[in-house]
Each structure stands twice: as C-alpha cells, then as structure tokens.
Image 1 (cartoon, helix red, strand yellow):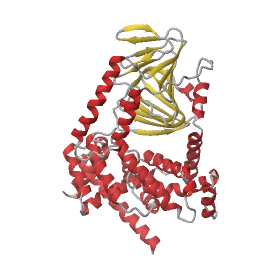
Image 2 (image 1 turned 135 degrees about the horizontal axis):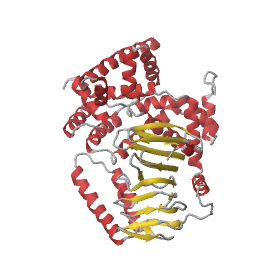
Image 3 (image 1 turned 90 degrees about the vertical axis):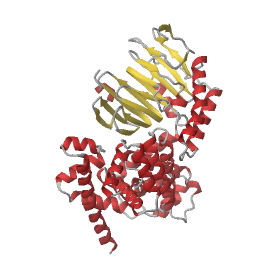
Image 4 (image 1 turned 180 degrees about the horizontal axis):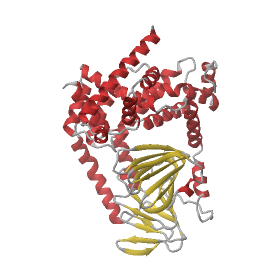
Length: 190
Length: 318
C-alpha cells in the first residue's frame, strides 16, 4: 500500500467491522507506528512493544464487530493497547524478581491514572531526526544503550569510564535530544 | 534526591540490578505526585521512544508479520498438522489427548487467581498462602508418581533413567520430575506434556524433567531441559507450555510450533509458527520470535537472529 495515496479510513473501518481482513490490515498499517510509540511510553523493550501492539490488533480484530464505525478508531485501539500493557505488567510480575516488581507496580499505578490521550508518534519521528544530528560518538552510545540495551555497567567497562560518568553522559545526550525534539514539535505546531 | 541519583536508579531498574531499598525508594517517588515522579515517567518514556526511533520497523513488515500471526491464530489446527507432518517416523500416529487431571485443574485455578491478585505490600503473607498448598500439591504429585506428561509413542531403544535405574520406555508411561530420556541414534519419542502441548524428542538426544513438575504450576522455573540433541514442540494457543531450557537459553512457546537443537557450544531455536519468548541464560537478553524466525546463540550470547527458510537447520553444524 502506498501511504501517500489518500485512504478512506472510514470505509476501511466499516469493511473491517464486517470481518474484512484486508481492510483491517490497512488499519494495521496506518496505526502500527502510532501504537508502538504509545506503548514505548511504558515499555522500553522494542520486541515487547512489537508483541504487545500485535496482540492489541488481534484483540481489536476479534472485537471489530462490536466497534461502532461512527466513533474514532484511534482512541478505541489505544485503550485496547493500554489494557494489554497493564496486563503485561501484571503477568510479568510472576517471572520478575521482587525488586523489579516493586517498581513495575508503581509504574502500573501511575499508568492507570494517566490520561494518555495522545499517540506520541510525532515524538519518535522527531527523535529519529534528532539522533541523526548527533555526533557519531554520541550516536553510538545512544545506539548501544537504548537499542541494543547494553547495561550501563558493561558500557562503563568497555569504555573504561565509571558507571556514573556514562550515566551522566547519557543524561546530557538525552537532554540535547529532548530540546531538539521539543523544538521540532514546536515548529510543527507553529 | 537529585536527578543524577534518580537517573542512576532508573538505569539500575532497567538493567535489572536494582537493590530492594533502592527499588522501594524509586517506587515511592513514582507514586508521589511530585515533579520528580513526572520526571521519572518522562525519562522512561524518552528511553522507550529512543528505542523505537533506533529500531524502526517498516509498516509493511509489521503488517505482514501481523497477518501471519492472525492467520495462525485463526487456524490453530495448522500447528497440529505441521507437527504431525514433521514427525520423523513418517507414521500417521494420532497424538492422544490426555484430559487434565483434577490436580491440574486446581493448579490452573491457583495460577489464575495468583495472576489476578493485587500483591501490594503483603508479599510474604500471600506467598505463604499460595506457596504452601501449591508445594504440597507438587510434592504429593511427585510422591504419587502421577505425571501429566505421557509417552504417546516410543521408538526402540529409548531409555528412561529414573532414580539411577535404566527402564524401557513404553506407550502410556508417565514421566515425572527427575526423569531423564535418552534416545538412540535411530529413534525418538513423542510425549503429551499437557492438554494441547506435545513434544517430539528426536534421535541422539537427552531430555531431563527437572523438579518441580507438572509444567502448569512451575513452568517459569524451567522444567524441561534439553541436554543435547533436537526436539520439536507444538503448543495449542489455549494452553500454557512448559519452559524449555538448554545451557544457553530458556524458551517459552506462547503458541505454535518450535524446533530446538542444542550442542555443548550453541543452541538453535527455529519458530515454525506462532510466538516464542527466549531469555538468554545468565544474561539480560530477552527476545520474542515469530513464525519463520530463527535464533542462534552460544555461551557468549546471541549470534544470529533472522528470518529463515524451512531448511535452516541444515546450517546448524553439530
């Protein structure tokens, strides 16, 4: 599908409510990045995010017959995903150690209170742009830490620096990225 | 607490090495309505968005993967067909259905209740309530030797090692914690692990049933260990599969069918259909694989993870 082509989303939703798999797959293509950005707010592991978003789409497909086409699809599927993420936090408690579960539970509580009325896809897109503007050295560090999930202690050992020095460096880079991201989002809004 | 110290706590949490006292401190700040609480949530979100920005997945690839999964979900009988097709003997044995015994039903209920219960601060109290009866059930299970894992077909020469004695394996034999299966060069064995979950241990392989069995109760602790060789497992999506382990990884098949091979130096997972979760043994690496993906690992960690063809196993040198 060419996303540059105008898509009649309402029509696809209507067809999907009648069980049309092809129409639903178009909705998947449209909404997957938004939903992944939303899930990433609470889950930092990309593969878990991928899995959760797919499961949310599976839930949505199963219950598509109950969806009222005159309503907005975005908030509906976002709610499904949020429930999925909350269940994910609850179920992983069994396999996590007690220390991690203590923090997981606090995040879960915070999440249940949050309004969460936006997808945040624009933030991911802006960040992608902002990362490409970083120095190569900083790009590598960000890649190792946030994409490859290398623990700070391992980074410190490899780069022959203390864990706090690495942590500080990462914090500064995130600050640069945040400023850049907010600037880009401000530009878009303006 | 200043932001630098908070940042260190967040890193310890994400890296899985946070201490109990630090975890309580971090949780307490998150629960508060302070600016620091918001800062932590923003920081966690920032890390997640960065992971997404750095791991972009094309929309069409996501859609394709979703459709494969949807098709698998819609026709779970495919798993059985695939499993049966791949049974090495070529015989069309029916994989027998073993209804869950009353113990399994109680354990399913216990686990479901456990998952839904909100622990909060009374972990010890709840752990005592849940673990004591469950341990009692498990030990009574072991003592009475009533396994939910049943041998459905066994080739000639397959050995069952139980309490240091070598026994011949027959159709209908119950397998319990502590058992070890050793297959000869030319035959294998088929086992019903529980309702909806079947396992085929191939030739020249060794599989151990580690305490505590049955899988339903203690499946997160690792209960089937492939010591060497190859196996195939099929899990209907409605049942929980046991945790499979090798010396390099732990594997949980959410649903679908998977092939697992291991040698001293490495382990290979090939997901034929469905979804499979893998933990790198002794490391923090966690991976989710979908139908058509393989995962090769040695004791140093992940070697390769990718899409695969059905013949990928031929690349796995023993």
